Image (cartoon, rainbow, N blue to C red; front, side, top):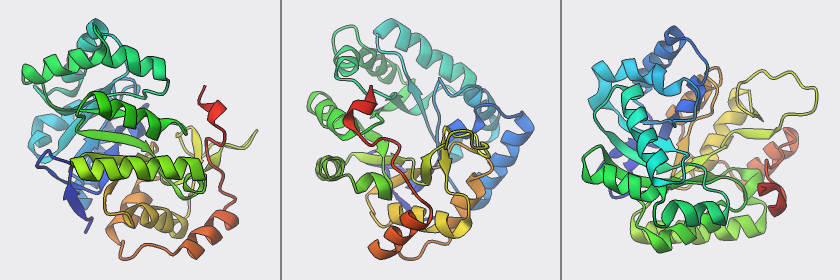
Length: 292
């Protein structure tokens, strides 16, 4: 059985694996419905999608007619200004066939300038707050990528009491000491304030090698064998504060859910180091400059 934990201060007991809707970017409704059956089988009760994830919201929409009450439903807006974010939030509601979202997130805020715009006068945050006041969304979060993510989140939390944050977490990234220091500094703030921490890229192996055959639809090469995925998932679950957003590939999803379902104890540092060496794992972001 997949473990559950309080999702911040929402009052919702979410499975520690959150379904990453990016996996439904470009699939048929029949394929999407098979994913739903898998989520129901494993008891996953939290869906995380975004307006920019291709057809994902359209694929999830039909599920909501019968299963809306069974899922904490989160989406994201990548817009930075009030009017465009306002329109995108309402479009997401239409596509998802629901009258409300449990969580709307400001999506992939990477640059300081983006954060200033989104949180400033006439920014996307105003649209999210308005939607909350109208009952269209219940909570507001923020997401970020790259080595700059923890710093962006720490800055954002100085300006607004976000319900949740989302950022990368995997063994190779945490070997980058500046990133690790920033991550754990953010984790301490989130723990103190009851802010949910969602993680991405948990089973990332490395950037796709040049000319490699892409056997998965995610933009990086994921780990592919069950034993390796078990360790990568266990590494995240070893931190009780963290939630794990599943990989953006429907074929990898069953292995991630199986790893979460059978999790008992986290792997040791030695096991993770051996895994990283054997699988030639490489961080997606190695230098701060790469965030540009």
